[in-house]
Amino acid sequence: MRPFLTLALVAALPATAQPRFEDLSGTLPPHDYSGGWEHFVGGGVAVFDCDADGQPEIAAAGGTAPAILLHNDGEMAFSAAPFPEISETTGLYPLDLDADGWLDLFVLRVGANVVLKGGPGCAFEDATASFGLPTDDAWSTAFTAWWEEDGRPVLAVGNYVDRADPEGPFGTCDDNAILRPSADGYAAEPLTPGFCALSILAARDARGRPTLRLSNDRHYYVREGHEQMWDIGERRFLTQADGWDGPMLWGMGIASRDLDGDGLAEVMLTSMGDQLLQIAQPDGTYANASYEMGTAAQRPYFGDDGRPSTGWHAEFGDVDLDGRPDLFIAKGNVDQMATNAMEDPNDLLMQRPDGTFVQAALEAGVASVARSRGAALADLDGDGDLDLVVVNRRAPMELYRNVTERTGHWLAVDLSQPGGNARAVGAVVTVETEAGRQVQEVTVGGGHAGGEALPLHFGLGPATEARVTIDWPDGTRTETEAAGDAVLHLARDP
Image 1 (cartoon, rainbow, N blue to C red):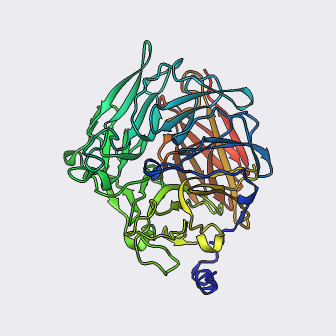
Image 2 (cartoon, rainbow, N blue to C red; image 1 turned 60 degrees about the horizontal axis):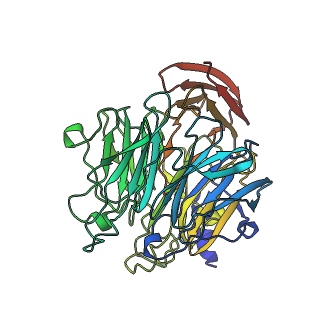
Image 3 (cartoon, rainbow, N blue to C red; image 1 turned 180 degrees about the horizontal axis):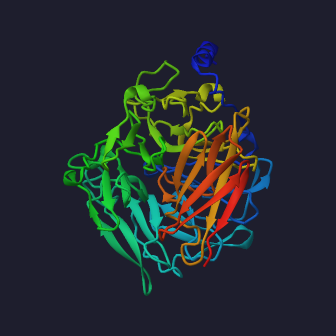
């Protein structure tokens, strides 16, 4: 289909950007994200190692169908595993809530959310009550977590429209909620105003401070809403006086990654229309990326539909191991929205040496036109490069093995420490080679309705070793030398 476009795209790509993926979708058990208007949004996927064998599993939201857990059988083979039957799910996020060494799942739903406690052999049980999580009947679509002290994490849940409001849905965005550890489990406090959050991420902002970034859906907040930033330490929303002038967009997902080695993470916001990349500035503010940077991805690149794209999950990852993070964006029409492209292929934007990005999805074999929602770039077969899984609305889930010809080496950094924050969420990892430095933060949240709990992955380019610096959550710094093409396990001393 469209062979002339394939040839033109190949000719336009630089010699270093030659990603290739093998489509293994037909090997997966049947699963899609289904349901009516309450499942136009959501459809997230979680990737995490639930049985501690070094091979990550996949859990996917099902909408009105049950969520599914796929066990990693090795060599990119996955089989359906026993899993609690939970319907009306919109997303799932893995984290170790009780620091017992087994990853749990926070499950977002249309209705009361659920916490699944993980155990040996990927055994999960509903532990919502035993963890003391308050429940309500909200329509939850976003999640993040962070640690403010040793012990249990603080959780934030983003909610969509108030389904019970007879005047809705327009202008009826529900309040979001922060869940703080209490003597009896967790206590809920409203995070208001809420503007229909479809993604929340707790991470260091351009000021270097822990902050919640909320991506909101303009389609429903209608008036007086905008993208939000909430200072975790001061417990308040940032304003123009802080240098924050939140844009107004149909926000769907968040991706965060330092792209220029200055230690400050850029932020990608997906949307109906332009995908907005914000560049962290030295003065603690953000500047919108120029169109020439190549990240706007505002229309389908097939060229046969001039209507705007609809972006959902976005994720940075070094697909070709050249030492430069690339960007995948899952796209798809909300359902039958005539103002936006119907066949809206997913993006794979490869970063070039000058910092600009070029479209490579068609050449790479990942230009699906299903209504994609959640996704993950993750090393699923343990060979060191990033594979891809995509959840689609009313279409089968997709699985792709990365078979890109190697252009470099890689390093994965796996952190652990004593205490409640066992996976060192909030730690900042800096990897330095002769080519420069890369910085990533360990986070829980962001994306669109799903995330990962895996070692941080770095492409090293031609380097075979790297200097690794860890700024642990308590401010302690450690440094070490690491060989490439391996997983570096670093356990902090008590």
